[in-house]
Length: 341
Image 1 (spheres, rainbow, N blue to C red):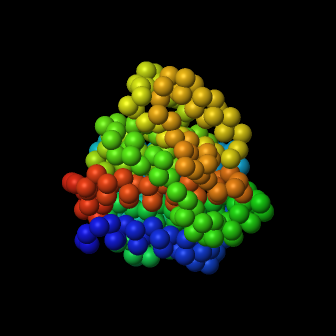
Image 2 (cartoon, rainbow, N blue to C red; image 1 turned 90 degrees about the vertical axis):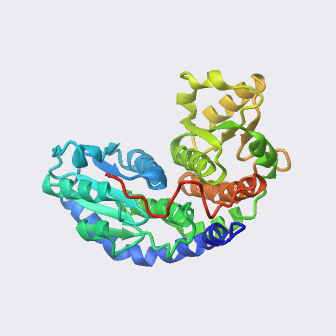
Image 3 (spheres, rainbow, N blue to C red; image 1 turned 120 degrees about the horizontal axis):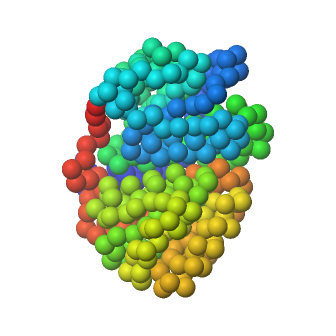
């Protein structure tokens, strides 16, 4: 790995182009998936993923429940790998998300789901991976090689793959149009300056990352990236869940990052920000202008807007790690492909 964040920065910078190319690669497999789910509509969808991909699955859960009214749950792979329990899945959709497609627990979970009668699909970057080969349908991320250990480009492309799926399945012309604009908006998001949060995060021992609706997945990914790249303890919550106990942690030395959606869920985040400031918390909220705030692009479509927030955040995460003297390309104790069972 190279010094100075070269790999992670290269991945982050090429994300918009990967999103731009993705639509063509998704067209045929997505059409096949839609043909099959419309012929046999599932009553629910199970997702299966680890790490950043699990946060992408959280984003997919929001999209499918919000736009299709289909309940989405997260499958626990140990049910298949350790407890060897077959689920009741006939006629349902089992959708796995993975960058490498090589984690044994995901592969075995797909095999169980197929044997139980589910239609299996995988959003995966490596189309020749074992996961791709055992899945009925492969939806390619199309990110190309990702050089850094901490995923950035594959997370963004997995989110955009979910956008394509939701737009096509629910026949959402407004979301289709937003997807067309997304590559240029991601490039613009990279140029936004979140320096206001840099020193407080560098000085912090712990922090909280909050979101809701389309930004809950973004808050979770942000917390994970701060752990991975800066060895910084960060927890993520829904802004609603934060009220149910964790708010007791709030103090002036405990920064709060609020990822504000551009839909109906925004009001609750803004109310929480006001409450936290009354409690003397150090609050950084997206959509507030620089130099004191975290600027965001003008609203376009709430779901696509959320993807732009993580693209801006990655620049901040790289700077935090560098300021703390950490090589973001060599995260402590991590490896590029993680295999678990």
